[in-house]
Image (spheres, rainbow, N blue to C red):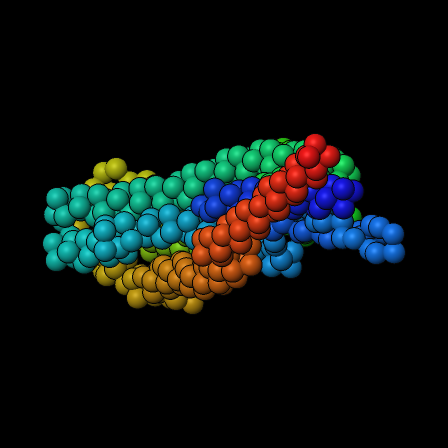
Length: 461
């Protein structure tokens, strides 16, 4: 009779094990479309045999654990690629906004207003005493100055928008870091208790992926926990503890800098959305503004110098056509933002070179500035064309890198799907396999039950 009870115990252990396997398969199927889910696999273990007399009798089967199928190296590669994509997306999104400011085909930019300004000077040269034509020159100059100011202001507004996005990203980083620290604690607690923590590990991996999209990240795998730092070693999460970043206004620039434990780490952040935003805010846009200021300063100074050499309708010496600009040492910063026309009376336009009202000699010199190499050894329109080309080239390069990165990221995600993703065909086969094993174990239980009933009733006959 003891052997029948042993058989019943073996069948019961099989029932429990196959039931757990069926539940695991059901969990996989239910999470087929859950982002970041890693399929789970039941690990069955043969129980130790029991000595019965001189014979070893099997002890049945038990569920040792339910393990999540994931490739840690592949997950790290996905984190790294997410950092680069986050940086490129932030950079490209911002530079495309800059590019839109210089879209000549849609009437934006400086090429048309610069050309119209020089064209108005040539038109006035035909009739230097015409007040309407003189007013047209002033209007063209005002349009040119206003476009310089507006463009510089829009670039500054974009910088401030990026500054706000940095602050928002830092808040999101802190939220994700705190969440990951909580998950670290929960994962460790479950593992210490001998329980599977696959769902929590999936949540943690997804949170890390989002964090990697925001900031350059280094993931250090500990025994039963994770440590997250920036690429330069600033701690974000250590076990169950997170370390919040903060933003402070830099008095020199007025922009937000990022601090960790009192240390300014702004310059060390180069990847993720934060890295891309900082690059455009602190490097790309200032570089564009510097070129715009150089063009504005040289164009303004050249026009003023020629205009002062001429005479107006009354024969008086010409003054400054544009508002004079005093450049800070070694820089033309602010030249575009302060561009303005000084003259308001068209009769004050210095068209004459010899003081006679009908002379157009100075107009020719003013119009000829278009052909002079006054900006870094280039003509104004050529300098501007190269400037616009540089912006377009920056956008094109970033776009190409983003597309290439998307392909790499998609390939990595496909590889992850092949390893950790749920296959309905495989799960359907597992369902049938575990179902058959469960049914067989149930049949054994029924058979042993019949044998026990027969054995018990033997004494009654």
